[in-house]
Image 1 (cartoon, rainbow, N blue to C red):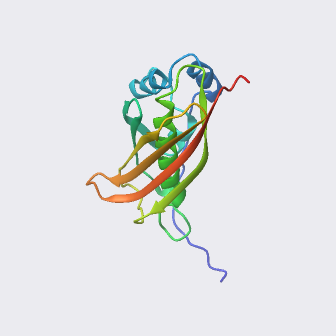
Image 2 (tube, rainbow, N blue to C red):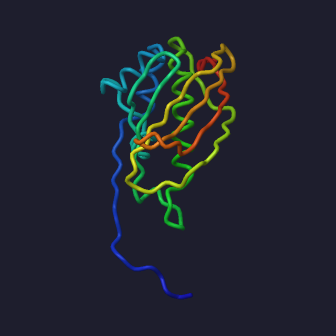
Length: 169
């Protein structure tokens, strides 16, 4: 039991923009404007998107798609991508789908999320997560999401409820 795995170590450096400055900017824009700014590069992505190798593929009101590619830094101890990678992508697109329906000055946070894992993930596999608002709301909104490989193979699904609030109160 004293043997430890040997092999080369890997390094990954993460660089990101001040998330609080980005959040302040976001409060001046509608959710749709804010997300479209991230998609076109005029608004910097949040640190979680950089950390998890996610990027926005498409944004429309009530529907967003993000792409993401896990790398070996996302592996769990048994050599598979940790389920948290899929859960993070699904939570992100559920939240951003709701965000795309909100006016300037409104925020949201997840109340709950249910994730169903359908297949294991390996590093290097490009994935697409799509979130759709199933019921918008002024206090609570609901969304569903899918996570699939580039060939359309479904990897995981989620449903979520999100609290909508004014962060200044």
